[in-house]
Image (cartoon, rainbow, N blue to C red; front, side, top):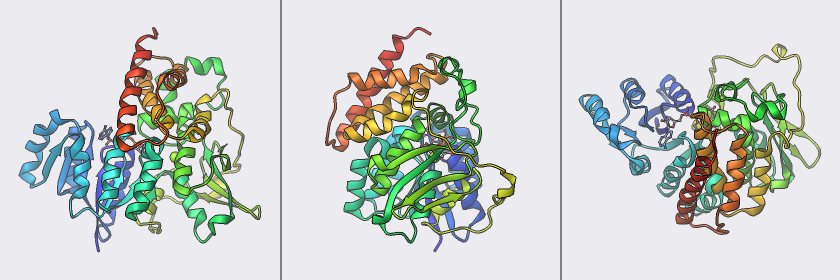
Length: 387
Ligand code: NAD
Ligand code: MG
């Protein structure tokens, strides 16, 4: 059977790499929906090549341009936030790849769970914002979710064949980002151009800034907790500047299993699309002799205070991480626009957390409300900062 994939975030870094894999394996996969946020020209170009049944653009003002270009090709079009979730219901969709940025991943993921569509989850923010709720819905529906994030794919690969009660600790590797060796004073005034220079990975702008603050690693600890059901105090971040060891699992007999590979997302994307199976024929394979040394160090939570937000959010539970995610999205956008300093990102998150009400067992509507309010509060805090 050829598997129909809905690629949400098709014009992005993960979306394009997934489309490469789908295009090169027409015996296995077909992209039936392509969805994007605002880059309508890119979406049109991709739709011409990949010929999905449906193309979706989140920004409704761009629908006429999309329709005009794709109607002659017989490709249906839709727009808006609701269309981004509705599209997963299409009968030709067997699996949904969620590769949009930030909070926008939650609604389509929830819809996919309800529609019993397999999920390949790149959008980690979905589990950060609402991991508790997503897990409840997954266990009620029996829908399967496969992680795309390289660290979580690595952990899933290490867990194959192991008994859950023999897992002692998850060791999530982190490159340390572009500021790994920078002194605190220099980091405080780093520019967007400095922060966008990731040493090993080529990714979208938002996750690249999250890697520079190391909030990305905090999010990955939260993501791992929800995916693998391991207690927060047994999940650790380890700085590994070469990004060759993608993560590790330590077992109760002391053994450590690791998954290694080049820093290239094609492998974890293909492993998720294939429901935890391997796809032969990767372009480049890791040659360990090219890497004379692989090094590991403890992360510095003083220079990277965002990293501590993982344990804070997991011990508080409820809507804490939803607030952190919302404040961060606003702060990162402001930093990229040159409106705040790098060092302000953490302060905006911490001040938003302090100002926000907290819901301990949130419903879907509570997450919606907290996301909205936290964004408004973070925006007000930023407006009060003069750069
Ligand atoms: P990107 O910025 O390169 O692409 C994002 C895609 O999502 C684009 O197609 C964009 O049009 C779309 N989009 C953005 N906002 C949207 C919205 N509000 N509604 C609908 N569509 C929207 O991002 P990326 O680097 O591909 O990352 C995508 C997700 O995957 C993120 O959650 C990120 O954390 C995760 N991820 C990325 C990588 C990586 O290597 N890039 C690795 C692991 C996890
Ligand atoms: Mg990752």
